[in-house]
Length: 409
Image (cartoon, rainbow, N blue to C red):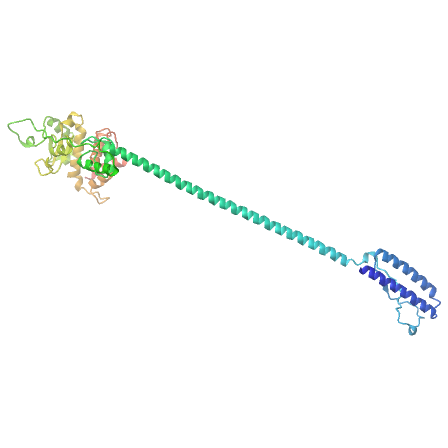
């Protein structure tokens, strides 16, 4: 609209100039009227062309107008008589350019906003996906933990069931009365009683109590055999010394003496003043219900459970041991008890401050196991070992401990 208004204004100026020129001609400027009229017509045509092409026309005041024109007779009209038109390259485009730039900037801003919103949406989607992944991972971990806990509970329940079943099996099987057996060791460990591998009265009482607690049958619980008097020496009109002791046998006394004399020098030291008896020890027979292979008696125990008999500090080996071919091993085993009592009991281990008897009992698991270990030390792993088990050898540490003890004591 501004271009049209400028064009109209320009035409109005031209018409006004023409009228004014005509007026001037009438006022006496006849000499220059014709050329000026021609110029105005030309300018008007150019102006029309400018209007058609949309180019603004600028009028410039002429410095070279007719000097003969009387300014005193100027009727208030403009005397600009030269029209200056702008070149095509000078056409003002600022409005159009600004409009285009503004549109471009708005478009770029819109695109940037769209990109920002898209990035934000993508980030939100990525965050949500990561949150979902982590929640899934956490849920899976918690599920796995629950499964593991359930597996542990099931494993524990299965183990408990196995142990209960095993305990019931141990409690309900048969046991020999008064004889050493590995089964009896397992039973005594289960019952929590002293472990010697021999089923006797104390083991029987604990066994019956355990069966009653679990409501199990007692059909297989052994009973003590009826007491019988200890065997005595064949009737004789006279006796002296150990031949008069209750339980003395004597048929293999010479063989027993020979086995004792063949003992290692370390063990021989413990037998000074000790009575060597071929017989069935009366107290062992009364408590076990049978004639055991051998006994070391430091106090002189009688069949009635009292002590102080004449056979205090005696070593007994029965006919059963001799006839069973175990004389040499039983001799070492019982001599080891004598050594433990007579020597190790007062021999202090400077490294521990305890006696060697205490240290080695702890190492091997008790007095009987220590005597078996000494038997294996001298007679080898295949020697008869009632408690450790025949064929049980010594570790290097156990071997070294016994060597050190014998060297120190």
